[in-house]
Length: 208
Image 1: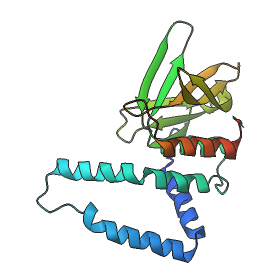
Image 2: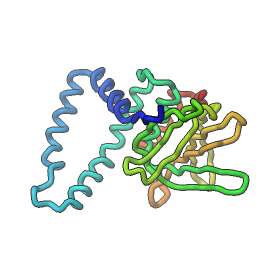
Image 3: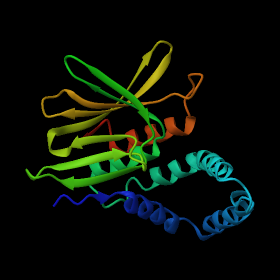
């Protein structure tokens, strides 16, 4: 069946599981925070649509560290396979540089993936699509052609680089995802902590 299965409900379910497991006091504090922010998030009725989008975008950026913390806390409670869980977690990573290299060409782009979907191809293999919600970016990965996914880091040019490498069955990198630095060369510290948390949870390598 070629019908794609959207991964967003699974992501929402993981966050709800974490919230349910938290102490009642902590949940009440979160609810109070949400109520307190309601006035800020609701723009005036006459506000232009562009202003509404800017306010919403800024709020999403401010809450990103908290959302990453919730996702990391649910790493060991998800019923999904480790590889599917890892693919879903990439959507909490923020901007990443996606790199595909062949013997004759290298393709690079920076994107902030928002969801993952799956479908079964005619040959029976499974295809995962990492994408933005507006489909301006899509990365397709054949699950059956992977052997593992590796977490790697190294120092280069006076700064540390953080990689998530998808390795094919021949041992070659099929897709490399590199944590992308903010303007000025600085990383979002919550993104680094999230990457380190995933490496601690999954280990240095995840079998496909």
